[in-house]
Length: 158
Image (cartoon, rainbow, N blue to C red; front, side, top):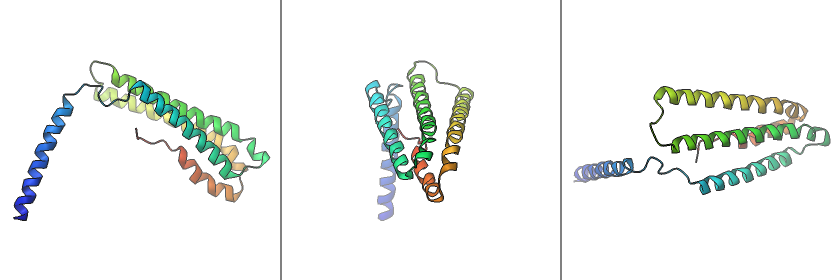
């Protein structure tokens, strides 16, 4: 009896998911994309979070006057990388919203490769700006630096 019940529930679930998938497949190509107002709210929230993370990192490191001199270059590199990521996200959304054919697999791989190259370049700039700051830190500050930097790790969430 349990096996029959389990099999029936599984078949019903598969059938429901098939019809649900079909209903989503016929929806508009831009369905699910955030509106311009939502994008504005997301960007504002990201800006506020970036400000908070930078302020928290600076406070957490407890920089002395000499170390604080290296902070502006580091902060600028972090902000530039965040701005560039935001710009790429906006461009990708605009590409997705355009009517017409979707990029071919080769075009998608080219777009991905370009994205990876730009991300690597930004990371190198952050690394270069981080070196003087990190070199000026004492051992306790260096232990805190890594965990505090994780806040700036890019994520792939919406």
